[in-house]
Image (cartoon, rainbow, N blue to C red; front, side, top):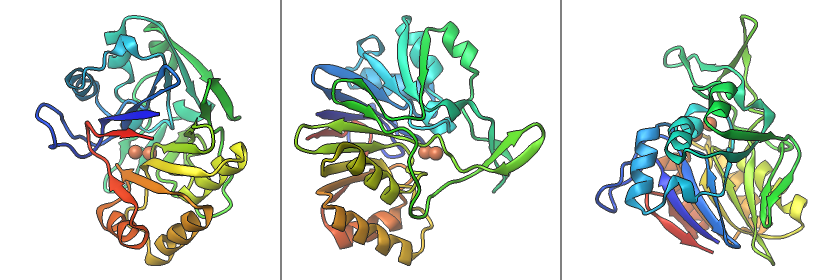
Length: 270
Ligand SMILES: [Fe+2]
Ligand SMILES: [Fe+2]
């Protein structure tokens, strides 16, 4: 498996790449190329893709981890640039209207309607169940929450505002043969729940977890549980970025050792 980071909060390692809040990676495996998430901004996504020599028309299929704007905001520009239909695998909940209340009221859901994306060629395959949509590419389906989760924001429905459990938060599992790689978007389901779900679903050990771990602001007790949990699952290596948090990243790095940060343009070969 080869993974290239296209959109991430951090850049600066190579000229011409832009760091911006959001997440998107290209996963190449068994001859297929899957775009995971699209970052928060189409212009930044397309610019980074071009700078890395990746053309929208060369992507085979798309996987969206959840409906937040920082993972879906580049989808429209990607479809327009591609000018051709594409299959999109995701959870049925991504189109819910969602807002944040702090530090100010703002929309944080997908900034497009399903219809406008379909007009541009999006073919959605929503499923809350695990699905192997291409050989070796498995959508996790909804993740059972046995430990704490890291949900954020509120759902707006019929004028009511209720806490958003971010049920649509799923992960991409890449089957490497003897083990698996797990790609998280924001990790709202809780990184331990995601890891246990992926291991149980496939019956294989986790070689690596790559993505956002959503630990920013987490208390030390929770971080300790992450370290113990990932150790007991035997996860070999972490690549943590996006919403992981700098202090929290440092904690994981100091306790686990085998942790690397993400930045736009980083290539990971497993
Ligand atoms: Fe998110
Ligand atoms: Fe995010």
